[in-house]
Length: 441
Image 1 (spheres, rainbow, N blue to C red):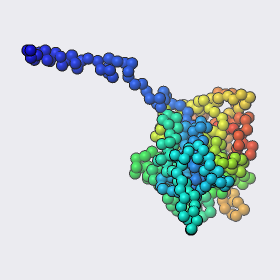
Image 2: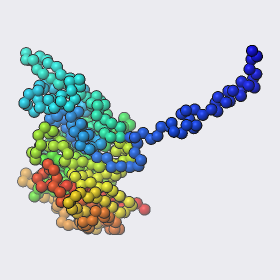
Image 3: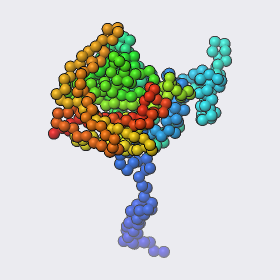
């Protein structure tokens, strides 16, 4: 048999390399499409950024809590334990009995089974003691997360105080636990601890977000304390815990009033960035429900992001592309140049009122600081003009365009539907947009 000639060998080689491959251009039907987890454009994602488990002062296992949020239509959750990230080896005393922890363990076993729940009996002071292992974040997240559907975010509630004033801040997407440090005042305490989050983000290259929790808890933080803290870009406008006084009282401003005061002073007097408002559960209680309990499902954020990743969520929030809710659903919120537009998803038999609030550039911004019964200064009241309602409508779609003499506009939607299991009696379902400031020329 004669050997193949060189030209014939070359022709065979060219033919082989030009044949269509099953994964190439010759077989378009076999090309993989977009992964299901990748959205076709921005969508609204529901999440809670403040909740607690048995890793700190919550009463249930973190997997049970994550499972509750996932089954109830949330797309993301941050477990924010007090001064700790769930990352170490830890066992807690627990046995199946009629105690709260026993009830939690029984439910945990029923949901996840003996193959997941790790138990042991150890000697404690001469007594056999039943214990359960608390799974670290890196372990239980793998059980619950689902691409495009549910995401867990590492976080911590940096829990501190100045004298007797509680100063709590949540750090979102932290890599390492942050130990709170002292400041020389409430204002300085916020600054130094917010800077710790910023420094960790810069050091690690991880995007992070920090916010002030429940300013009216213990009447710890006034508007005046927050105004000049440039590091503070987010705060809890609505918190579902029953003891944080979102509404204020006869001598203390509500959290919503604090928001308008801070926005007016920052934008009208100090040339600082606006403050964005958050709504969270701050849940601690998952076994018993009622007005005295800090239960899940009371308040959340809806973030407009293209994909369900921590990076996309935080980027959208930094841009103000989110709203807060205790039940009202908004199908569209547009902050287009100088116009804020809102579209409501109507519920059967429910009526809505959308109110737009502004503060004008010529509004007097000198507060009249009063003092409480202990002589401590409290938030100034201002007379009129700060957070003035300029439009009220029953329409499901509405908008407001900033005038030349207005510092910002924000909207609140109130519904006629009572909130299920509210943190404060009488609360109705609501939604709040983020403030829109004038577009730069």
